[in-house]
Image (cartoon, rainbow, N blue to C red; front, side, top):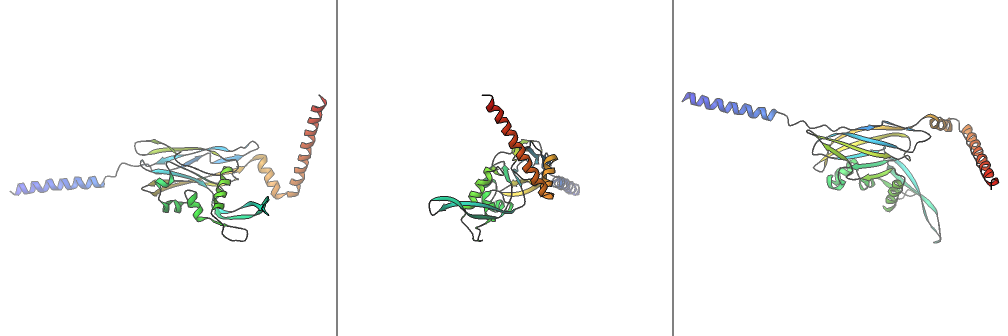
Length: 264
């Protein structure tokens, strides 16, 4: 009897140890969220007309992804037109937009409102509505104005190619422990020189569960950099040079057209 009891106890002990070991074993390792951008420096040269950017990385198998490229929020101004005396269109004033990024480019694996709750979109400023809720729009007298002016501001920035939202455009390749993702985009030449933030958000269950970030820089180089520095440090000399170059260009065009006219 004692042997039977001891045998049963040993069996139960073995089962308990095995169960504890199973609990202690980690789940299959999932890929940590990462992101990198290539190139990390975008040079502005005489022939500059934008660039190709590739943002890539790893993510967990079941996570949706949102990519945001932006700058820290600043104040911006936009002039608006209206009819004077109900007849003629003319500039009537200036709108002040408090706390807007200079560049705002968003890509995602699916529609933002389907994968993220309103609170999460607001917290991480993902989507125009979320951004608009945090932006104050005032006229030149500091008085708040209608929401339509923020919508006009968005349309203006989209025409400049510095604002854009592309939902469902992030491509992924499934692996054993995670996904590899990649986004290739045309970087707009209209974007000013500076350092830009790249943020990738992993989303699951309507919430941001992980985040990875990096930066890249757009910088003037060569002759463009030298001329920009001269414009700041030696404004008078830069002005003289600009006038001289304009005069020479005008003279050259005049000579070309004169020769063209004489040949007929």
